Length: 284
Image (cartoon, rainbow, N blue to C red; front, side, top):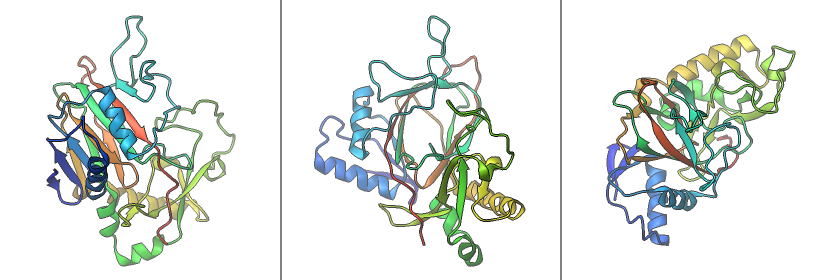
């Protein structure tokens, strides 16, 4: 069912019974997704209805609420990522055409989503590629000394500013410049994946606004810089050059991802769905 592209990281499926998803097929899909946290479906006839069904096979639908553009009235489960304009000139989707830095989806909430599904409807001739970084191998490659140092450590992820540095909806900028005092959530740096049971790093996003609970900021900065450098090393990264019709499923719990920029005069139109997850569980 799955062609291995990168061992224990990326798999490809070109023959999938999309219109006959019984419990056996769903079980096989979940098993493949556990082994390959990035799955590419290429040449499989998937539309909005099929994408929503695949998402529900992986979990309850996660409704994205922190965006101003990209919501569909006909399919509320789908979030549109695009740089196109509606006839009235308003954005047809979110995220535009610029670069999107490394992140884990919804890292600033108590229970981040588990699965993301992204399907290409229109793609630019160059650019707009998506990159994933494997947090299993990033953790495994750490020295034993560093692994011991990370035991019991939590990152405080503030929830006031988004990844671009703009205030989130309904949030006001605090007077204090100490991010540790800002509202947010604390997640363990090392987590145990609930399905694979493997250990991985969980770094979230917005490195420049992160703190480590109970640690002085100078020490935290040094440690976080080292972890982010390790996590995004080319040794742990694979990227997707999109074709129309491609659908990617990835595991938000053990990966970082980003997008590179593309020509604003070209069009990139994607449909994304997301499945609910749970609170990241500390490995130790």
